[in-house]
Amino acid sequence: MPQTLLQQNHIILVILLFSLLIHGETHKFSKNLSPKSFPFKKEKISHLHFYFHDIAGGDHPTAVRVAEATVTNTSASLFGAVVMIDDPLTVGPERTSRIVGRAQGLYASADLDEFGLTMVLNYVFIEGKYNGSTLSILGRNKVMSSVREMPIIGGTGLFRFARGYALAKTYSLNFSNGDAVVEYNVYVIHY
Image 1: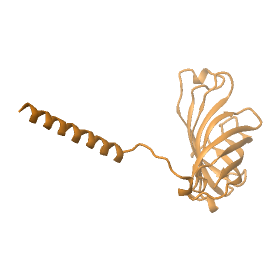
Image 2 (image 1 turned 90 degrees about the vertical axis):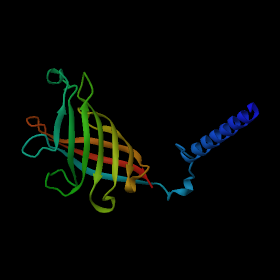
Image 3 (image 1 turned 45 degrees about the horizontal axis):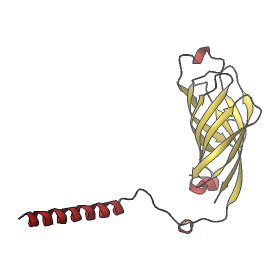
Image 4 (image 1 turned 180 degrees about the vertical axis):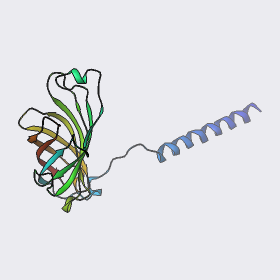
């Protein structure tokens, strides 16, 4: 009897270990892939040029403050303000210029001493060969500098595996209502 019980426990242990091995093999978290399994072509560098219209005033704003800190309105840098955007990207600086995409995301005043924004946004393209593709930006925008550089950290569609940088230069700024037009030159490496 003790021998039979020992054999049964041994069989149960073997079945349990075997089921754990099978379970572990079928539910892997990650695996290595060959670059050959992706449709990689030769890398290209593209230069995109457009204007970003940040419309804070009027009846149809595209930039809306959604949060602020208790110190935001007394801070010289508006520290703690968070703004959600869906800004048009156009070919020219005029608001009526042809729209090629949208800048969607948010920016937040993240500097106690000067006007410096943390930008978290996607350029969503709706025109030409890039229609349906996006570029993602995450970086610091030191607004009062003549030219600001922010990194491209990825993309979708024709911009999968994208990397590069965006140069922003203020074209116009209306201090009374906060509207701004920013010229962007974007340099992106993609496949």
